[in-house]
Length: 248
Length: 220
Image 1 (tube, chains in turn purple, orange):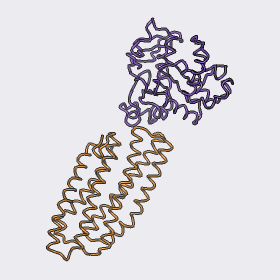
Image 2 (tube, helix red, strand yellow):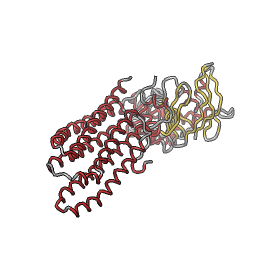
Image 3 (cartoon, chains in turn brown, purple):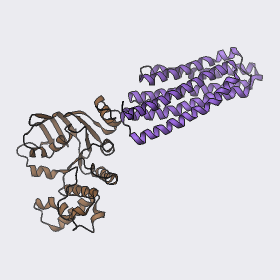
């Protein structure tokens, strides 16, 4: 389970996230929606401490994963990122073979057992619904795959190190409708084993794949509700104006 | 106003036009029945095609709106309500036409004024017309405060309908030669009772659109 308590986040003097408290249950899909610059991606990156890579940032409040504050000094970021995988907007395979892309996380974690790695690569590619398409060309370059396949490869790469949480920052926004549909189906099937948090600009996508939806605006969490409730009868007028296109 | 909002307003306006037409059909049905005006009944029957055309047009326009604009939240509720309201209005229109056909087929053979008064047929018509016009105002003003009162009138209709059986039985026992006329009266009363149910359904749709509450079948 992921829980945040009174999160405030600053880029220098810019107050990007304001007093955000929410809970995301295990094995659910949570979608964050909101206009550009509203803070949804910043909030997502809190969960694997990616924001720390940006100079001049500052955080207050607590971010708990399975009850543990991931910003405690004793928490090792490498260990955290094994637990919390991430997939980005643009597929970013490494300039390696398909097999080595998926095996990469295992190798950097000093796993040397070849049969274990091979098994894990196969399991991950199957979980990412890519195995049948690449099983005969595992040694080929990842760049030979289509955009949609590359994105599923990146998901397989994230799954290989057995995370419990998967963060997705607009994972289908650069893909065609067929690939988008495959990613959405994948998200739906993965939630049996993973807790998934997805940032998307596509509201229909949020409606289709998520159990809960959070609407962000100007760094504030305006509403966090069941997705069905959010898209049929949101509680806040701001949410309604945004999802019906009357925003602004 | 954005393009999508204008399209939605146009849909609502179409349903309003249909509503006015059906309301006028019902008012004319009342007049034709109470006064035995066969010409007016013919007019109702001929205007039924317009009601049907409205339903087809609204159905198609709502389908297009959903396909093109993927409405959510209040917009989705409005489109769903408009589809269901137009179907219900069409059914009310059918009943008005069917009353008109009865008047045409039966010529001048009508119940005596005294028994019509006893059966409260005029009151039934008036109550239904009020239900339909008040629910029209509720949709136009997006105000459901009066929904309970409108729906309570359906109970009045049901009570009149239930009481009409005993009144008609007593009448027919005294006037066995009027059996055909009595049976026609029962059919008419049954139609009016059903129109009351349909008016209720319309109010439920307005409450669904405005308040996002489901009232039908006890709601949830």
